[in-house]
Image (cartoon, rainbow, N blue to C red):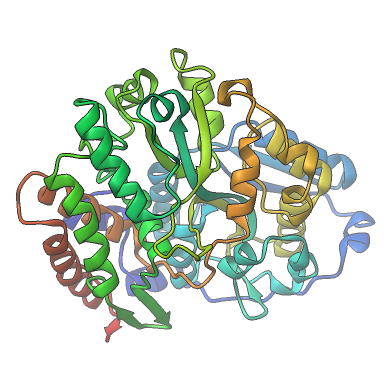
Length: 440
């Protein structure tokens, strides 16, 4: 995670400074169509920064189809280090790749800085291939700033053995989830239904997304910010009640101890995303065959609303000298059937293509780790239930850092989770104003 204050600003300079340093504007390259590219005589070399393993495999598949265009994939770091290097190159005005892996929650930040090319004319023909919410997340009308690559629709992974032993039914509502947490804490002291992931702000944001939280709306340099609204306060009160009752744990997530807790049964669920089943299968040995999957609980019994946690896009940088060819490559990486299937079967990314979400063989694969359950079917349904109306901030990394800081402080006894949202509101508004935004 990046840090707040001066350390953060070294990695994420202000919008006005970026524009002044880079001289970037939004270009709209014209698309000539793939057949024209295929017959092009000019030898073109593109670079892409991406951390997804073995991305070069699909890049080479592209070059086999279009021999005059070669692509070199470089891994300059995963997550924050990747973005810091992009920002440093933008500030320097040199050293940028032609394309970059860009998570959904980072896309607006770089778009706001004028760093991303509008490739809509180039790639809009592929729009209908993608799950609707993923295309909406990368586009603004006919303007498109990235091609969806993978996603993280949410669900619940749970310990079937623990649920059976303590007669717990997979909760279909958050009220039922709370009741189950209270029951398990009473019946099995030291065992928790879940761990509250305050150290994972992406998780916090995703669950708030599902609850209907819409804290941001950005139009140019005007931004509406309402982080501490009634939805946020209700959500915070829900989790605060479970924390006060010691019905859920508060260990830092993504640690060796936390993974061990999942494996040894200390935690009976992981509220997570579609990429987690493979990660868990690769990380845990004691609990082999004991895990199952269920849908994300709902705030209202009849609702069918989920959210997304994670997932990436492929964006073309505005400094790219061959934007048409780069856009063509991005479209290939996201929508070519052979390449896309490899993402899902070899690199284990969760699909964004309708064709693959509807593929009964792919989604219906049964995993021994999950007791023979076809867990992808749970997440395939969730993929089509993601609410498409959520907007990230154009400085989401800063927001995430403050969420982590303030929620951790609340858990440590500095006020409550509802109080943390008030502090979050004040800090984010102040930061937005410092960056040149007009806040309402």
